[in-house]
Image 1 (tube, rainbow, N blue to C red):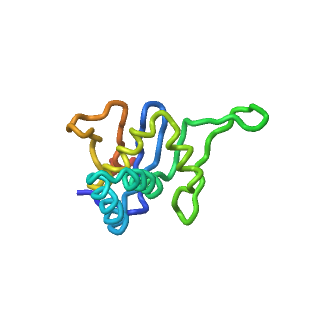
Image 2: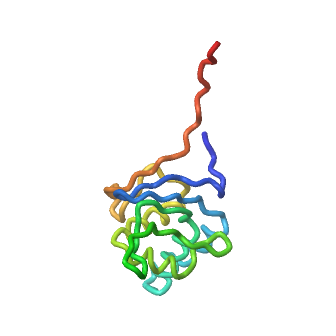
Length: 144
């Protein structure tokens, strides 16, 4: 069995966008579950708080996303962090992207640990999401 540290970064692909996602701490899981319980009872504000916080806590890197700068030049998008968590502006930008619901599903799945696959509300695997778990390197034969 392989245990994941909070500082580990798991590779996740959503279509052609690559992310690095970190596991949640016990405190973060407890906080997110409290928001989700309120959301299930119909509080949609709490649902959005849960979505924002799960992204804020989990997402650590992104590749394959670009933006146009003031001169109209294409630039690689970079995440912005404050105290190791995504900034509010960065969260707003991620939540405006077409794949945001899939990214949210990945981060919400982290409540149960590192998943093998991400499921929808009906238990079906969500297409287009690939998770690459950390692999244990097998010792090779030494060359003489």
